[in-house]
Length: 148
Image (cartoon, rainbow, N blue to C red; front, side, top):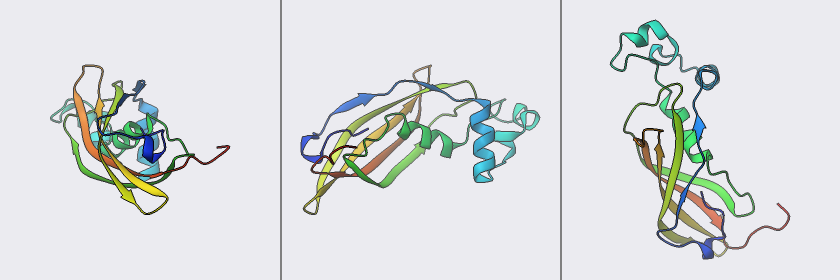
């Protein structure tokens, strides 16, 4: 999402990631990892009778995948700083392909060596529907670490 030192970032900078298809394996592994075995995610027969008529990918998984689609440059990203206004606007289904889009919407100094960069992060499916929106903040170094 942010791959430049803090001083080289600017409001309005945008990026779009490559795509990633959400799979059955992703959903089952996330169920096992988190203990989130809600029937809407894990029971095809239950989900068939639900509002969406099929299993839905867990929102937490959609969020994690969307922000990771850009990768993180360890030479400039110090830490995940927080997320605000997280909303799941449409369901994501097994087989959907997601792209992430980001735009830097805020920059603020955080001490001598860092700044906080906040991006509007959206996840968009293959139908160009926005499925997730949030404000995602990272603590960014002012100077790139060498050899990372």
